[in-house]
Length: 66
Image (cartoon, rainbow, N blue to C red; front, side):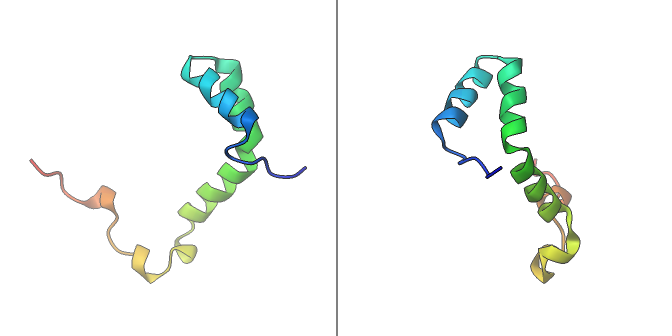
């Protein structure tokens, strides 16, 4: 099965339905894009793929400004 286009008509319709609170549409949307989302998250969580620039402090580590 090929990857769906992120801005395809079906995806846009599902996003509209999700924004209206349709839980079934949310499940269909996640299922439709699960492989791409999983790849994205795995890449972001892998410290070896981050390179030297990303190994320092992250924005989450920055102190809050008051």
